[in-house]
Length: 254
Image 1 (spheres, rainbow, N blue to C red):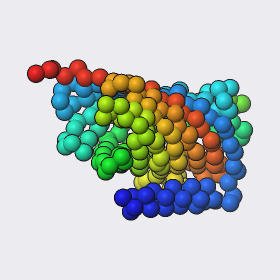
Image 2: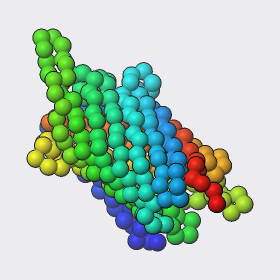
Image 3: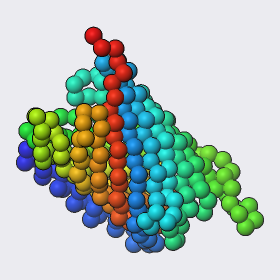
Protein backbone atom coordinates (compact mmCIF):
# COMPACT_ATOMS: atom_id res chain seq x y z
CA UNK A 1 0.00 0.00 0.00
CA UNK A 2 2.83 2.39 0.79
CA UNK A 3 4.12 2.22 -2.77
CA UNK A 4 0.75 3.46 -4.12
CA UNK A 5 0.67 6.36 -1.67
CA UNK A 6 4.28 7.28 -2.45
CA UNK A 7 3.56 7.10 -6.19
CA UNK A 8 0.50 9.35 -5.88
CA UNK A 9 2.31 11.93 -3.76
CA UNK A 10 5.21 12.01 -6.20
CA UNK A 11 2.93 12.27 -9.23
CA UNK A 12 0.75 15.05 -7.84
CA UNK A 13 3.75 16.93 -6.47
CA UNK A 14 5.74 16.69 -9.69
CA UNK A 15 2.90 17.73 -11.98
CA UNK A 16 1.57 20.38 -9.63
CA UNK A 17 4.97 22.06 -9.16
CA UNK A 18 6.75 21.59 -12.47
CA UNK A 19 4.01 21.89 -15.08
CA UNK A 20 2.74 25.38 -14.22
CA UNK A 21 6.29 26.68 -14.69
CA UNK A 22 6.86 25.09 -18.10
CA UNK A 23 7.36 28.43 -19.87
CA UNK A 24 8.44 31.72 -18.35
CA UNK A 25 7.29 33.53 -21.53
CA UNK A 26 3.64 32.65 -20.97
CA UNK A 27 0.94 35.07 -19.95
CA UNK A 28 -0.78 33.56 -16.91
CA UNK A 29 -4.39 34.05 -15.89
CA UNK A 30 -6.74 32.59 -13.29
CA UNK A 31 -10.48 31.93 -13.20
CA UNK A 32 -12.59 30.64 -10.32
CA UNK A 33 -14.65 27.91 -11.99
CA UNK A 34 -17.83 26.01 -11.12
CA UNK A 35 -18.66 22.80 -13.01
CA UNK A 36 -21.99 20.96 -12.98
CA UNK A 37 -21.41 17.37 -14.02
CA UNK A 38 -23.58 14.32 -14.77
CA UNK A 39 -22.61 10.69 -15.52
CA UNK A 40 -25.24 8.03 -16.18
CA UNK A 41 -24.23 4.40 -16.68
CA UNK A 42 -26.94 2.09 -18.04
CA UNK A 43 -26.35 -1.69 -18.11
CA UNK A 44 -27.79 -3.22 -21.28
CA UNK A 45 -26.48 -6.75 -20.67
CA UNK A 46 -24.26 -8.25 -17.96
CA UNK A 47 -21.19 -7.02 -19.90
CA UNK A 48 -22.35 -4.16 -22.16
CA UNK A 49 -23.42 -0.71 -20.96
CA UNK A 50 -24.28 2.69 -22.42
CA UNK A 51 -22.93 5.76 -20.62
CA UNK A 52 -24.00 9.37 -21.08
CA UNK A 53 -21.79 12.08 -19.58
CA UNK A 54 -22.54 15.79 -19.78
CA UNK A 55 -21.31 18.95 -18.12
CA UNK A 56 -21.86 22.69 -18.00
CA UNK A 57 -18.86 24.68 -16.86
CA UNK A 58 -18.71 28.29 -15.72
CA UNK A 59 -15.77 30.65 -15.13
CA UNK A 60 -15.53 33.27 -12.37
CA UNK A 61 -18.33 31.79 -10.32
CA UNK A 62 -21.26 31.42 -12.70
CA UNK A 63 -20.82 34.82 -14.38
CA UNK A 64 -19.23 33.49 -17.59
CA UNK A 65 -19.90 30.33 -19.58
CA UNK A 66 -16.70 28.34 -19.92
CA UNK A 67 -17.58 25.12 -21.72
CA UNK A 68 -20.15 22.40 -22.20
CA UNK A 69 -19.87 18.89 -23.56
CA UNK A 70 -22.04 15.85 -24.25
CA UNK A 71 -20.24 12.47 -24.24
CA UNK A 72 -22.07 9.20 -25.04
CA UNK A 73 -20.18 5.89 -25.07
CA UNK A 74 -20.58 2.13 -25.19
CA UNK A 75 -18.60 0.20 -22.57
CA UNK A 76 -17.71 -3.48 -22.31
CA UNK A 77 -16.66 -5.22 -19.09
CA UNK A 78 -13.92 -7.58 -20.29
CA UNK A 79 -12.95 -8.74 -16.80
CA UNK A 80 -13.95 -7.86 -13.24
CA UNK A 81 -11.20 -5.22 -13.17
CA UNK A 82 -10.94 -4.04 -16.80
CA UNK A 83 -13.47 -2.07 -18.84
CA UNK A 84 -13.09 -0.85 -22.43
CA UNK A 85 -15.06 2.01 -24.04
CA UNK A 86 -15.61 3.64 -27.42
CA UNK A 87 -17.34 7.00 -27.56
CA UNK A 88 -18.03 10.38 -29.09
CA UNK A 89 -17.83 13.87 -27.54
CA UNK A 90 -19.15 17.23 -28.67
CA UNK A 91 -17.68 20.31 -26.98
CA UNK A 92 -18.24 24.02 -27.18
CA UNK A 93 -15.67 26.24 -25.45
CA UNK A 94 -16.78 29.84 -24.95
CA UNK A 95 -14.87 33.11 -24.88
CA UNK A 96 -14.15 33.75 -21.18
CA UNK A 97 -11.51 35.17 -18.85
CA UNK A 98 -9.07 38.04 -19.28
CA UNK A 99 -7.08 37.60 -21.40
CA UNK A 100 -9.38 35.11 -23.16
CA UNK A 101 -8.03 31.75 -24.30
CA UNK A 102 -10.23 31.95 -27.43
CA UNK A 103 -11.31 34.76 -29.76
CA UNK A 104 -14.57 32.97 -30.65
CA UNK A 105 -16.63 30.08 -29.29
CA UNK A 106 -14.78 26.95 -30.41
CA UNK A 107 -16.61 23.71 -31.31
CA UNK A 108 -14.90 20.33 -31.09
CA UNK A 109 -15.88 16.77 -32.00
CA UNK A 110 -14.02 13.78 -30.62
CA UNK A 111 -14.00 10.07 -31.39
CA UNK A 112 -12.19 8.18 -28.65
CA UNK A 113 -11.29 4.82 -27.15
CA UNK A 114 -10.61 4.20 -23.48
CA UNK A 115 -9.44 1.54 -21.06
CA UNK A 116 -10.23 1.62 -17.33
CA UNK A 117 -8.57 -0.61 -14.75
CA UNK A 118 -9.98 -0.72 -11.20
CA UNK A 119 -8.64 -2.63 -8.22
CA UNK A 120 -9.16 -2.52 -4.47
CA UNK A 121 -7.13 -3.14 -1.34
CA UNK A 122 -8.81 -2.81 2.03
CA UNK A 123 -10.57 0.56 2.22
CA UNK A 124 -8.83 1.82 -0.92
CA UNK A 125 -10.11 1.70 -4.50
CA UNK A 126 -7.68 2.61 -7.29
CA UNK A 127 -8.81 3.68 -10.76
CA UNK A 128 -6.50 4.02 -13.77
CA UNK A 129 -8.06 5.44 -16.93
CA UNK A 130 -6.30 5.92 -20.27
CA UNK A 131 -8.16 7.64 -23.15
CA UNK A 132 -7.01 8.29 -26.72
CA UNK A 133 -8.95 11.22 -28.22
CA UNK A 134 -9.12 11.90 -31.97
CA UNK A 135 -10.09 15.57 -31.94
CA UNK A 136 -11.57 17.69 -34.71
CA UNK A 137 -11.15 21.27 -33.49
CA UNK A 138 -12.82 24.33 -35.01
CA UNK A 139 -10.26 26.90 -36.16
CA UNK A 140 -11.23 30.57 -35.78
CA UNK A 141 -10.07 32.97 -38.50
CA UNK A 142 -10.41 36.75 -38.41
CA UNK A 143 -12.72 38.28 -41.03
CA UNK A 144 -12.58 42.04 -40.73
CA UNK A 145 -13.27 42.80 -37.07
CA UNK A 146 -14.95 39.45 -36.33
CA UNK A 147 -13.84 35.84 -36.07
CA UNK A 148 -15.54 32.85 -37.72
CA UNK A 149 -14.91 29.09 -37.78
CA UNK A 150 -13.06 28.51 -41.04
CA UNK A 151 -12.32 24.78 -40.85
CA UNK A 152 -11.77 21.82 -38.52
CA UNK A 153 -8.25 20.64 -37.73
CA UNK A 154 -7.32 17.13 -36.57
CA UNK A 155 -5.40 16.79 -33.31
CA UNK A 156 -4.58 13.77 -31.17
CA UNK A 157 -4.59 13.82 -27.37
CA UNK A 158 -3.88 11.19 -24.72
CA UNK A 159 -5.36 11.47 -21.23
CA UNK A 160 -4.30 9.50 -18.16
CA UNK A 161 -6.24 9.72 -14.88
CA UNK A 162 -5.34 8.16 -11.54
CA UNK A 163 -7.93 8.25 -8.75
CA UNK A 164 -7.79 6.83 -5.26
CA UNK A 165 -11.00 6.44 -3.22
CA UNK A 166 -10.90 5.78 0.52
CA UNK A 167 -13.93 4.47 2.40
CA UNK A 168 -14.91 6.77 5.28
CA UNK A 169 -18.23 5.25 6.39
CA UNK A 170 -20.29 2.15 5.64
CA UNK A 171 -23.89 1.13 6.22
CA UNK A 172 -24.93 -2.53 6.11
CA UNK A 173 -21.52 -3.34 4.62
CA UNK A 174 -22.08 -0.88 1.75
CA UNK A 175 -19.83 2.17 1.21
CA UNK A 176 -21.67 5.41 1.97
CA UNK A 177 -19.12 8.22 2.34
CA UNK A 178 -15.69 8.17 0.69
CA UNK A 179 -12.75 10.46 0.02
CA UNK A 180 -11.24 11.11 -3.41
CA UNK A 181 -7.73 12.18 -4.45
CA UNK A 182 -6.01 11.96 -7.81
CA UNK A 183 -4.63 13.59 -10.92
CA UNK A 184 -5.40 13.70 -14.65
CA UNK A 185 -2.87 14.77 -17.29
CA UNK A 186 -3.59 15.59 -20.97
CA UNK A 187 -0.82 15.10 -23.55
CA UNK A 188 -0.74 16.52 -27.10
CA UNK A 189 0.61 13.95 -29.56
CA UNK A 190 1.57 13.71 -33.22
CA UNK A 191 2.79 16.12 -35.90
CA UNK A 192 -0.02 18.61 -35.19
CA UNK A 193 0.47 18.76 -31.41
CA UNK A 194 1.26 22.46 -31.17
CA UNK A 195 4.11 23.97 -29.18
CA UNK A 196 3.41 22.29 -25.85
CA UNK A 197 3.39 18.61 -24.93
CA UNK A 198 0.97 19.27 -22.06
CA UNK A 199 -2.51 20.44 -22.95
CA UNK A 200 -3.97 20.32 -19.46
CA UNK A 201 -3.49 18.99 -15.93
CA UNK A 202 -6.00 18.53 -13.11
CA UNK A 203 -5.22 17.86 -9.45
CA UNK A 204 -8.34 16.41 -7.82
CA UNK A 205 -9.58 16.07 -4.24
CA UNK A 206 -13.07 15.64 -2.82
CA UNK A 207 -15.73 13.53 -1.16
CA UNK A 208 -18.49 11.29 -2.50
CA UNK A 209 -21.71 9.93 -1.03
CA UNK A 210 -23.72 6.91 -2.22
CA UNK A 211 -27.38 7.86 -1.85
CA UNK A 212 -28.38 4.30 -2.75
CA UNK A 213 -27.12 1.58 -5.12
CA UNK A 214 -28.24 3.64 -8.15
CA UNK A 215 -27.29 7.22 -7.20
CA UNK A 216 -24.16 9.01 -6.06
CA UNK A 217 -23.14 12.63 -5.53
CA UNK A 218 -19.61 14.04 -5.43
CA UNK A 219 -18.18 17.39 -4.41
CA UNK A 220 -14.64 17.93 -5.67
CA UNK A 221 -11.99 20.61 -5.74
CA UNK A 222 -9.97 20.54 -8.97
CA UNK A 223 -6.97 22.70 -9.69
CA UNK A 224 -6.95 22.97 -13.47
CA UNK A 225 -4.00 24.14 -15.54
CA UNK A 226 -4.53 24.71 -19.30
CA UNK A 227 -1.90 25.63 -21.90
CA UNK A 228 -3.06 27.07 -25.22
CA UNK A 229 -2.01 25.61 -28.57
CA UNK A 230 0.75 28.15 -29.15
CA UNK A 231 2.04 27.81 -25.55
CA UNK A 232 1.72 31.56 -24.95
CA UNK A 233 -1.12 31.50 -22.39
CA UNK A 234 -1.61 29.39 -19.27
CA UNK A 235 -4.78 29.25 -17.19
CA UNK A 236 -4.52 28.24 -13.53
CA UNK A 237 -8.10 27.71 -12.39
CA UNK A 238 -9.34 26.81 -8.88
CA UNK A 239 -12.48 24.78 -9.62
CA UNK A 240 -15.45 23.36 -7.72
CA UNK A 241 -17.15 20.40 -9.42
CA UNK A 242 -20.58 19.10 -8.37
CA UNK A 243 -21.32 15.66 -9.82
CA UNK A 244 -24.46 13.53 -9.94
CA UNK A 245 -23.86 9.92 -10.97
CA UNK A 246 -26.44 7.25 -11.76
CA UNK A 247 -26.00 3.52 -12.34
CA UNK A 248 -29.07 1.75 -13.74
CA UNK A 249 -29.48 -1.88 -14.79
CA UNK A 250 -31.72 -2.57 -17.80
CA UNK A 251 -30.26 -6.02 -18.50
CA UNK A 252 -32.53 -9.03 -18.57
CA UNK A 253 -32.99 -10.50 -15.11
CA UNK A 254 -32.62 -14.24 -14.82
